Image (cartoon, rainbow, N blue to C red; front, side, top):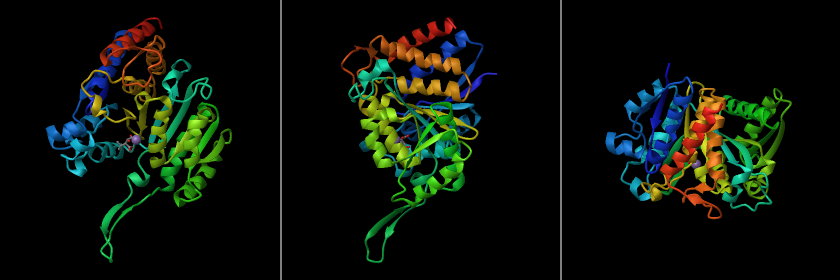
Length: 367
Ligand code: IPM
Ligand code: MN
């Protein structure tokens, strides 16, 4: 039976990079006994303008019926967003409800740069002689993002705001288990990112961690404060392998991860729930470069690679997609949005897609 995939192309550069990413499915169908049924649906700011809602009901149905969801970046520039009511702006109106609907609590954000791609990083080569290979795991449906929010005026007539950071022990346990399992699969080291010198939520988190650790005694835990981790990511990223953290810490440190890679454009991600998963680039919709055919589709194609592995257990095919993208970079091709002037034959989004598909075609033909 065909695998059903909901395609939410999103806003700004979304449709351009999505067009390249879904070509992977055609190449796979050509070489493997597999069929994909792609169903496009409106999502984000464009959906608000066409359907009056950032996450329209018909899109919810498409997602409910899908085996997996592939989502492009959404959102508009700050100025353009002002034309949309706050609750329907793409982040609050589409992304967070999508995460909540499918309880996609486990967010995998690989911070990866092969040895041949170190020139993309702003870090000195001697800091990352072997490239960068970190798996950042972010809790995605709890904490400040989903806590109660209140605005008001106090007795003295001054305005105030309150935003609650809330976690249940089950929520913390389930993401830590994911962290431990990934550490087991990789180097057996888990960096626990916390702020227990100040936040009660981190004291709580660390208590649960100590309990969960008993079931994963082969994993070494290294505790590091979130602020120190930010520095360490710049000075010595090689010390990290798997990092696990709560939602807000993960939002910030994963963008820093993109920073040390040289671009958020190099960061795909997977958002995994108990029954459904969706895959998306970690970056925004880059309205400033939309429609110019210059955005690199790596993060979107990489999101397909993650889907193949994590939703469909197509491990070999997933590796082939990664490898195809690496070889395009190794051959010196790049797009102008990526910050590497050092080496590079600059090509368009479409051409980059062509090159990846050619490589993938070759790889799948020979395996
Ligand atoms: C991300 C994004 C989102 C987040 C926004 C767009 C809601 O920044 O996926 O990291 O803050 O989680
Ligand atoms: Mn973010």
